[in-house]
Every structure is written in C-alpha cells, then in structure tokens.
Length: 462
Image (tube, rainbow, N blue to C red):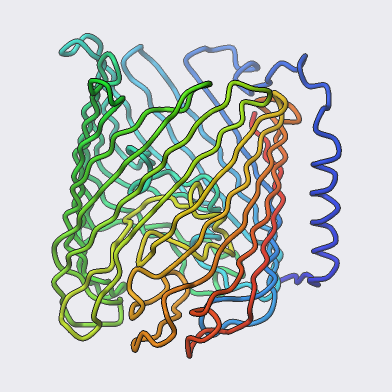
C-alpha cells in the first residue's frame, strides 16, 4: 500500500483549488458533448463510462480511537451498457470499480472501497397509456433514488453506491403525479476486513432474504402548495452466521411538501417521518429494544432575479436520539439508505454528521456566476438531539450528558467548474468544524479541537 506524506498533499490541494478559482471563464460554449454512443452504429445499444478521481485531506480526526491527519486518493469507475431490442424493453448492466490506491492514516471501509462489482444487472419493461400515464417496471440488481433521497438514494459523493436486488414498479402521470412500489434485498458490500480493503481484494457482494426493504411512495400536485408526497418504507433485518446485525424491524411512514426554486420567488420544503418497530443499539448487542423515533426537515429559500441567480435558504433538520440508554427503548432515528452530502457536508473520509441524534439549523447561499461555474457557501450549527446518546458516525458518547449537547458548527463551501460541459468537470470543496463543548469534553472524544477537510475531484463522462 502506497502512502502519502500529508504536508505536500495539502500543498497540492491548495494549488489545485486556487487554479479552480483563478480560471473560471474558460471558453467552453462551443463544446459539443462527446459520447461513446456516437461511435456505435446501432441506436438500440448504449455504452457509457464515468470516471472520477478525488483527493481528500482531513486535518484532524474526530472519531473514537483515531488521531492525526489523514489523506486518501479515491477512484471510482462506472461502465453502463444497455440494449433496447424493442421500444418497451431495456436490458442493462453497470460495473463499478471503487478503490483507494493511495492513503495515509485513513481507516478504509466499504463506503470508500468496493473493487470490480456488478452494481446493476436489470430488465426494464415500459408501457404507455396505463391509467393515463407511463409505467416502468425494473427487475434485477438496481440502484434507486426515491423522493427527497433522504431515505433511499443512489450515492453521488460517496465512492461506493447503494445497490438492491428485487423489483421496482413506477407509474407516472401528468402534473407530477406518480405511484411507486418496490420490494428489494439490500446488497451487502464485500469485503469488509480493513486489510482486504487496503489490498483491493475482489469479493463479490451478496444479498439475502434475511435483509429486506420495501416501500410505497406517491406524489401529487397540491392546490396552492406545490407538490406533495406520502410514503412508507419497511426494513426487516435478521442476524446470520456471517453478519451480526442491529436486527431492525422498522416501519417508516412520512410525508413531504415542496415548491421548487425559481427566479424571483420563494421556495420551501417540509418533510416529516416517524419510525416504529424493534431494533438493537448496535450489531454487537443481543437485546431487542422497542423502537420509536422521528425526523423533521424544513427549508425556506428565495432565488433572486439577478446576475448569477443567487439563492439564499434557511434550513433546519431534527433527527431524534435515544433519550435514555437504560430504559429498554431506542429513540435513535435511522436514515435507512439515504444520502447526506447535499445537506450536511462531504462524506468520504470526512462525513461527521448524519440524520441520527441531530438538531441543526443552518443557512446556505448558492450562485452560478457563469454557465460553466456554480458554487455554494453554507453554515450550520450542530447539537445532539439527546445529550446522552452517541454522536452518529463517530462513536463519541457521554452517557451521563455532562458534556452538553453542542457538537460545534461547520462552515463549508464548494465550487464546480464544467471545463467541457457534459464531459469533464472539476470540483473543489472545503469544510471546517469549529469544535463545541461536546467535542472538547466528552471522555472518549479525541479532543483535537477544530477540524479541517478539503477535496478536489476531476470527473469524466463519455
């Protein structure tokens, strides 16, 4: 395993980010997007390739039993092939190769590494004019974006992608109306041993009837309010000899209403979900707990009719935590298979915040000064919803609550430059956590103070 020296790595990151900001106005307006498909004579066959190379640098560790800075160069390659022998049938497959060939003081996991894997292998059947709409039925190994993507998502930033095996049925009508129902087996990524991940060993992912996910999701236009959703998701998980689990038997119903951003007007989004059933505090536990938890999100934004189409938004998220670790109940919200980068900052070797035991208001400003350049600046404060529960993703916990609930605040920015629109994009970002009382005082916290994280990525799609 190759290693990086942290100091020159940070210098490289700084130079690359400076370059990204210094030359945003390159002449890309005459570029015509290139696709491999253009070289294939048959219009019924499609082949797409996407490759992303990203360098990440973490200044200080904030997780339990970790210390010092960390670096990683992560690579993700996707190859998607489709055949469409008829207008109503598509046969497709997508390969994923996710690696971290160079790293320093980085604990690798399956969110970063998953070499040479069959991400998708599916059949899609399409029918027109069914109850006034279009029907698509997908079967096989799939990826899915559902609703707001807070509970089920195809990952964008993370170096590996959630996959599921089963069936996904969707009807789409006019004015945003839709009905979606699915039953799938979540795919468990392999290998999991850190040594195998560091070596890039290939081990095919697996699925089992001991791990099932189902859902029903409906969307409709609402008078005066925009669009509305109703949904319910079910997760059923059992232990196996190879994989102990949290034995989650959860039902998650909820709703969302929203109005999309447009120039010169307000937009908003409200989403609420409740969760009930049984679960365990961790995979190492053998005690079944009654589970009741809840999650709430609110956004109010305004898009200015001005140069760069600037938008300013106020945001708030609340995900319940376990109120009492000794009462036989679990109140910690489980985000299932949702994405979190679009609200709580970069994940990768960073990713300090998730929709679990979290209370966080924030403000976000975004802009697009050029057709090829866009960016945002965000600031959020982070509190624990329960000061006796764990800071999710880190393992840091004070069961007495004496360290308070204020984790800290995060300042974050990101900029994207589409060097060749549709083909090549350069992206850079930075996040800084100003440590709060909980980070500084919890007994098992590394207590390293503020945290810095930066990244730069180059993405190619053809």
